Length: 386
Image (cartoon, rainbow, N blue to C red; front, side, top):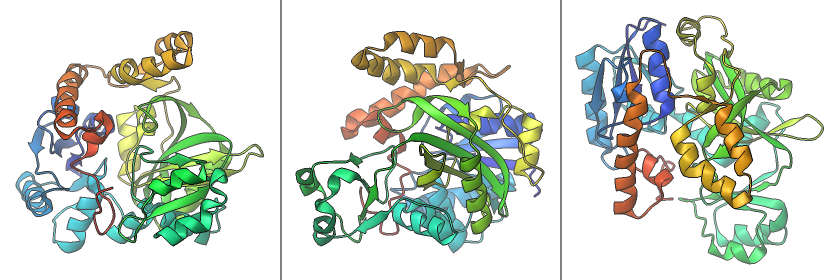
């Protein structure tokens, strides 16, 4: 795969910053794009230029035109999405004639794995063990599972950050759910065990990078903000089998559950970058793997964190649970993932980026997490407003 100039999208995300640093460190020219005015990655020394785009969720045609014009004007060879803009780009690559390679599968496969019911069916078709998962598209579907709701987890088919998840609810709680064909839900058998997150990179079905990790602290119910590496043979087998069976090219992540007997079951899939990327810090080795070389292994063993997020979310959780001592220990024993040699600006820029997100949250009366992805969310083919 040839790549002289690379466009990394989703510049708001720490994983986009990390990816830009890796590619830049390997000698590639990296430009970044996103719709916020001041995303953290734009401040990096790895960023040759930052380009502000229209919000793809609210102005898809303007977004598509801007992306294609940017690719042509900058001579981009490869586009690497990092967040949910991958779906908007997948649509553009399906409908247009963009003169660059998109480091992602086609739109049909992207949609299939993002769909929490279709993903389970796909994994099952590949001979992988899966938890029982039922598609809910009507009130009648809710009634069919109401009697054993206490053994199930309910969640929208199109969602993120564990938004709206109902964990083994009482039957009456289901009265608030209104699933439809446009906004379906799933009822998934509750799986007890230890959750493992997986970040993977693949080319033509061959695994090129894999980091398995656990999140001890999260922003609310969703994204991890303090995480540590783990090794698990069953989890690796699942990821290898899935990327091989789908012929996957691009980044992909999974939420897996390791059961007491050591077996692993998948909960859901996100066809984008996640925090496991931060366990790779060798620019040459990682970039070679991304461009088609052999598999690269994680080269960081210490836990990783975003300290600002820990102060916002982690401390509050520790105080509620009475585990402030554990919080202090976690802060001492993790590396700040935004730190990078000779590139201090993004760590300072996170305050401006947070202020921009907070402004959106206040105006829209939504949470910080919801505000952080509001303009790039992709909620299925009908774009329902979940």
